[in-house]
Length: 497
Image (cartoon, rainbow, N blue to C red; front, side):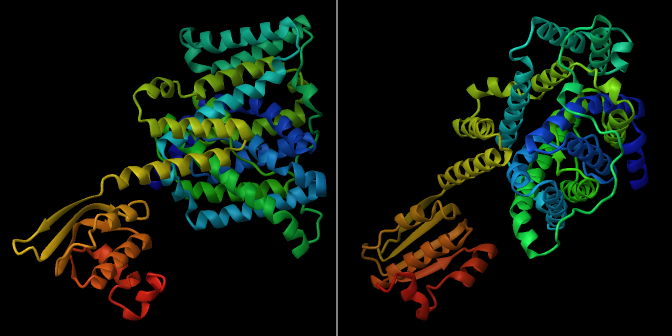
């Protein structure tokens, strides 16, 4: 069964995977160059990284069909390190980034994606769609009319070509767009910005090398903060992208395996002169929209990229940027979750606030980690507030008016602990108090503290207190952390009063 699964991952979609890989490779080249420029390094650093990371993750990644390479989010984190210490320290930081990600994978941090709500993922997707579109604006600013014309024609090809019988379903329209517009620009000698204008393409294959830095604690103190930030942002973007590709393909992926694969890929990139990278939602969407589903698409993208830039650089340099802008605009439109706009009217206010906040923070800061952190934090707070409202109490006084029973229902934790405590009437003249918790659950130390406080206060008022109905989990946490039956600790709970 495992062998069949692996065979399908590689050879279950050969034609579409190869064609999709070609499209991705052509779209990766200018982006890798641009990200290198952002980081302040030579274009070949980003191109080598794109080659290494995409090829390595093709073999060992946890999400077939996902494209990983150098990314803008990672490049932004490298700027200060490159300016202060140079390329060799960046390569060392890339190696350490990979090691940290492997450790995170073994600690199964990929499982933390279960804490990211759907509204955060939607906000993340919409923010990335906006950022992808915004990244194309410099190519459309202060340019001649022919740039807009070529871009418009490119979009026309992308959206209309699939309607052509037979061939429209076989060949990805973005590939047709890039090839036709490149030929047209060359034949008609249109004066337009090309990939060659982005920077010089490398003329040699990457070679194995160790970073030229002293391997000591001083170097570690310099690169560790950058590596940790790169590791966290890289895994966050990779796992979010994997979730999105899961949805697009209606398949599951191994998030912890992806963590380790991203780490190994970054180590490989660092050893072959490349910068750290991670999964790319834009390129992954291009791959999926072009029919790519298996590992062969990522492998093809990496191999074709390096072969093109090294052995066919004169041809690659002629690709008009307007053609690639058209492809990325298509990606932006396809990535944005348009249903989320319509759902604003029907979804709860808290869900909309989480989604919109994630979008705003990511777009404002250009930092995916900040946006997802804010989204998860808000979602957690809204959830805690909502759950706390489900806690309520029923009270009952016996016929002799000597026994008061408090019967609690719901979840008792840090956000509902104060409400739990406020339900008691400590001044009522009764001899016995029964706290029935058979329909309640205690989650944390704050909840236990509130129970301790209630029991101790009732006893100081002269009442006997009996707690009944605890489930096993609640009983365990109360026995471990509760002090109402431990006289030597009681004073600490009430602050000595």
